[in-house]
Image (cartoon, rainbow over all chains, first blue to last red; front, side):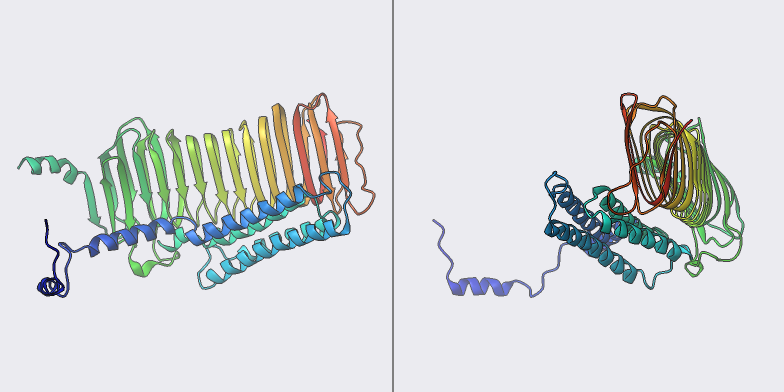
Length: 172
Length: 317
C-alpha cells in the first residue's frame, strides 16, 4: 500500500521544481500562424459580428412577419384598433432594428474609404423606397408582402454599405 | 539523397521572382485537370482561357509597379500572385498594370481577384469565381458554379450554365444565352438578359431591367426605382413569378394562352393595366391603390406582383 506523503514531504518536493516552467518547444510561431489564419478567414467576407448582426436582423424580421401572418385580420377575424396598434408596433420594431444595424455599420466604416464615391445617393434611393413602403403600410398595416418588401429594402441598404466597404479589397 | 530526389520536382515547380518594371513573362506549370487555379493581381488586364492541356501557361507583362511575382504549384493548386510594394496601396498608383493571358485546364476551379482589373474569362467547365473592385468582367462559355462580382464596372456574359451569380454596384449586367439558376444584382446599373435560365432572381435599385426568358420555372424580382420589362415565352408547369417593386414601372408580357392565377397589388398610386383578359382591377373601399385577382386558363402557374407607386402592365406576347 502506498504511504500518503506528509505536508513537509510535499513542500520539499515542490521546492525542487523550477519557478517557471518552459514548454518543451516554442509554441508562439504556431499560435501566431493560427491567429493570422483566423484573421485572413474572417476578412474574406462579412465580419463574424456582422454576420451575427445581419442574421439577427433577419430573424427579427421573420418573427415580425410571423406575427403579421397569424394576426386576427389574416385569420379572417374582425380587426380591432388594438390589433392595428400591435401591427404598427411590430413594424416599428422591425424598422428600429434595421436602423440600429445600419447606424452601427455606418459608424464602423466611418473612417474607411469606400470603393465608389457615389454610393450615398443609392442609399438615399433605398431610404426613399423604405419611406414609401412605410406610407403604404400606414394604409394597410397587415400586408405581409409589404412588410417583406420593407425588410428587403433595409437588407439591401445593409448589403450596399457592406459591399462598398468590403474588407476583401481593403486588405490588398 | 533519396529525399532530395523526391523534393526536386516540387522545387522545380516554383517560380518566385523579383520583377522589374514591365517585365515580360512566358511560363508553364504542370497542373491536374480539375485542380484549383488562383490568380491574384492588383491592377491591369487579365484574360483566362480554358484549354485541353494539363498545363497552366501564363504570358504577358507584369505590372510596372510590382515588387515581385510568384507562380507555383502546391499539389492540387496552381497559384499566381503579383506582389505590390506596400507604399503603392492606393488603387490609383502610377504606371501600367499587368497585362496577362492565362491558359488553364478547362475543368479547373478558378478563383481570380484584383482591385483595378478588367477580367475576360472563357471556356471553363469547373467553377469560376471572379472578384474585382474597379473593373469590368467579360465571361463566355462557362459552366458549373459561376460567381462574378465587381463594385464599379459592368459584367457581360454569354453562354453560361449552372449556378450563376453576378453582382455589381455601379455598372450594368448584360447576359445572353445563359441557362440554369441565375442571380443578378445591381445597385445603380441596368440589367438585360435573353436566356433560357429556369430559375432567376433579380435585385436592382435605380435601374432598367429588361429581361426575356424562354421557359421559366421561378422568377423573383425585387427593385426600387426601376423600370422593369419582362418577357416570358412559356411558363413551366406550376411555375412561380414574383415581382416586388417600389416606384418605377412593371411590364410583364406572357403567352396569349397563359394558364396562371394572378394577384396584382398596387399600393399608393400607379395603376394596373391588363391586356391579357377582360378582367378589370378593383379599387379598395378605403385608401389609394388598385388590385387585380384573376385566374386564366386553369391557373397552372402563379403570378404575384406587388408595387408601391409603380404602374403595372400585363400584356400578351
